[in-house]
Image (tube, rainbow, N blue to C red; front, side):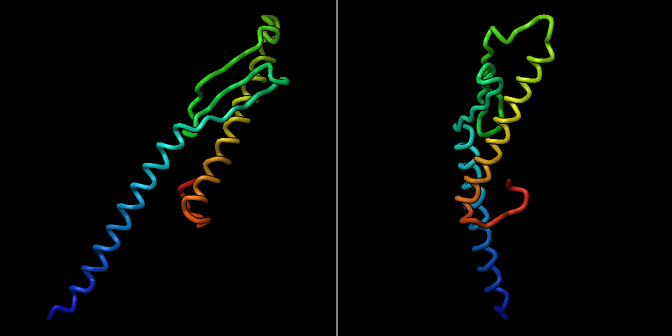
Amino acid sequence: MFKGLGDLGKMSGMMKQAMALKNNIDSFKEQLGEERVEGSAGGGMVQVVVSGKMELLDIKIDPEVIDKDDPEMLETLVRAAVNEAMEKTRELVKEKMSEMTGGLDIPGLT
């Protein structure tokens, strides 16, 4: 008659695990927001800083690289610096996620 009660215990345990995982992920996201990753281009003439949440936080441009007759060069340098920082951030997220999951690859988390 009470055969199904064991299933309730399993469900309760699974719910606790799910809540713990959610808390870990929330904490992980918070920690990522505090991370800072730099990217640069043109020998450091363009530098950017990106958060672990992939938010562009800062851009520094050496005045020497600003040429009103060649805006495409500056655009290219900014794009290259941002892309470098974003790639470094993706690598950081993947590394931190691997640490959090003990190397277990969970689709959709990275």
